[in-house]
Image (cartoon, rainbow, N blue to C red; front, side, top):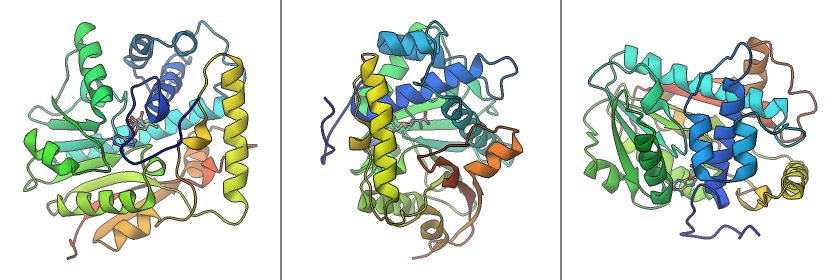
Length: 306
Ligand code: SAM
């Protein structure tokens, strides 16, 4: 039984919003095992295994047929998304940015698998049980971060900059920020606060990457919820109960790209549909969750506004 979202709710990697991080890692593990993989995340499978949900472990390890549970569209979505953020961080690092902040890091292993230039500090922020689990699990596997990895165990609806500064974050340096797969799990006003805080903590030349989901037309949210209910029932029938529609905040919110642009960021965007086409992926046909309409956003802070 999935509880409805409320202020101050918490989770581990097998429950509530935390489970979405594990599902994202399942899709990365499956993408990594493809014949000519577009992405390679060798830590995804062992991390999912350590979470300890048998069905997810078997899917990540290729021991269970994905059937309807993880469709090709989910795997392809994980590929283009991972590639987009990997390239974002590597371009920022190659341009001389030495400080990166991965907000809502989940089971993201970029600090361990990207070729960061020496001297790069990578901060990962997520809920305490999520970041602690990843730190412990990867250490037990003998994995060593490529960058100087530091964690901020925080709730991103709260005063998270204090924890980030406490871990050594320097707002005087240009930063590369990502908020990947996060915004829909924040209440609208917490999203605005998060984007404001990113801007306040950004020295000129900082970069940001996130997603922009268009506001719903009448009927869109109901269709999305129906799609999510259908997916939840399929998972439930296989013994993994998670009501996806209860995890997200629906309705109107400010769209991330125009909001950031209004605060001095110069951005480019590309839709998931275009990224699928650019990578010769065709599985978006029949997309009933409006995934193709999501736009990946990236850009630079040219002129901070008051
Ligand atoms: N970015 C990772 C990825 O793409 O694999 C994880 C994405 S997962 C869909 C959503 C993540 O957002 C989870 O790791 C969850 O813990 C984190 N998250 C959502 N709301 C949060 C909050 N209020 N505070 C901290 N983390 C949050």
